[in-house]
Image (cartoon, rainbow, N blue to C red; front, side, top):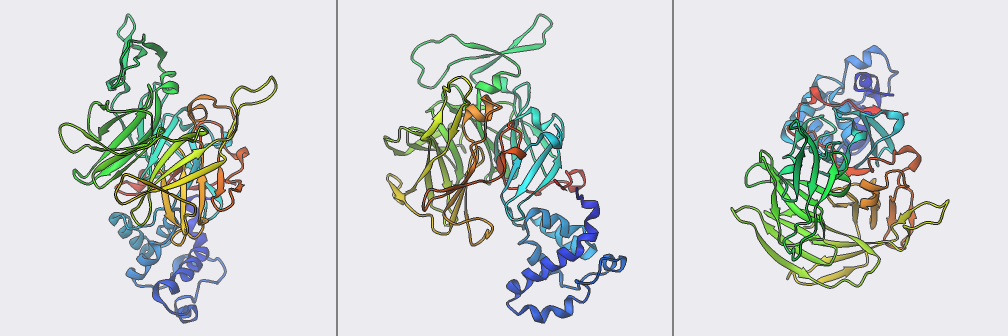
Length: 460
């Protein structure tokens, strides 16, 4: 394994990386950089660790801003001048966010996660704070944060790079959950009601042990920057029937949005929360006032019987896209000796037209790439992220049976070509633990203390 402490001997690799990027930034031939490279290809000796190419600070910052997170952290550990450029970019938040796949592995231990780089095609080990990551459910990732549920069904935000962890309001402050205490006043169980905004008849509540509520209640969660307050908004899709509640960081309870249900995915855009339902409805919520107003953008009747999940994403150009994920290859009631399986077979992509009331099907994403799963949905430019394949969908599990229920079943993840519908393997399933489910994340260092953070370690 390689740790940050051994990065000085990797200086040859880093310098080579710098001088591959520099010509593109400055617009001149690599041969003209020889004056900077006099020690780059020397043997790895103590003299190499003590000297560095004398590049201006602004040039170094321009180069480092293009690096993927592992290389960005490596660069900051090389020498004082490189660390200064790294620290300046980090304080300004002006570094590139690259998507990675976060997963756990039995060999890495209960408190460690692995971060798979699509660019380098290798994994890095992260040691994370308690409770052990392999004991938690991962119900979302947004802006570098994981949203987790522990064995008491309580939720936390966790930055896997810096190890900062923030407790969210208690699950008992959600409208549908009530605590049950034992004779000593200790929280013992939870009561889950079937309350919705459209409840017309009474159904008796269900009782769950502390560690079992999460298997039935939590579905998917997001954290969004709130530019109006400079803070963050956490949005939770939860049962019964996939309703929405939200809380701002610092709140002591959740706020329920009883307007609708059957939601699958959310984004936050221009001060509005956009939520798409499995039935084909697209709603917006204005969360800025004392009361929440809902507006229906699109209301259609889907005819895709095999569609189980819908996604909403904003393209790099600002357009809104709706995506249906189709499953035509599954067996949820296998014969004896066989296993349950559920395989994604197709994605259908639609653009929300400017008027906002119609959908236009798109057969090709051109230069764009989708990353879908239990994360905040991403649409990126393959030109900006050359390690990703244009007109492809990189997908991971998003089936509640897999993410929260059947924890020992195979993973439904891969890379799907929207051109011919062919699929290829994303990562060997033998590397991943079946629980928690792998999830896309864009590692982020912003506003965090690196000294207390998790160190990258390469998984051999």
